[in-house]
Image 1 (cartoon, rainbow, N blue to C red):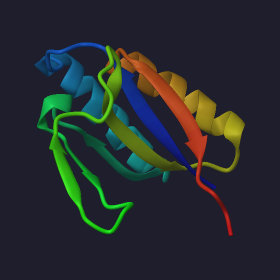
Image 2: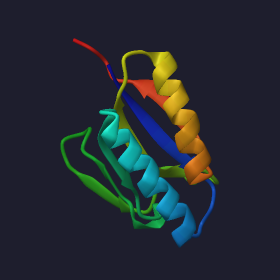
Image 3: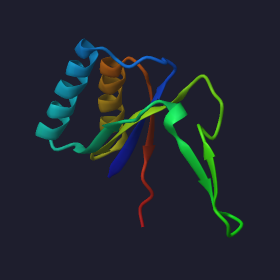
Length: 109
């Protein structure tokens, strides 16, 4: 089953080289164990563009959709046999990136 680990952060500055090295090592370990599907960090919320085309004409707005202290800073998509394994991996990910992680399974079917 696939899970998404959303990195929820409240820091406005990027992680330093030591933290990035730990994240890279964690990613390498996930890949070696066959868990890593994809991972990526995201630029600051101010770089976002929101597109709303619910009414047939796209409306573009610069900046994040929601003003919030916390924001989506990055994510992992992993493969794990069950939620228990996913949660153990997420606990490691939270430690290395020094941020909260939200764990959610992908819909099946």
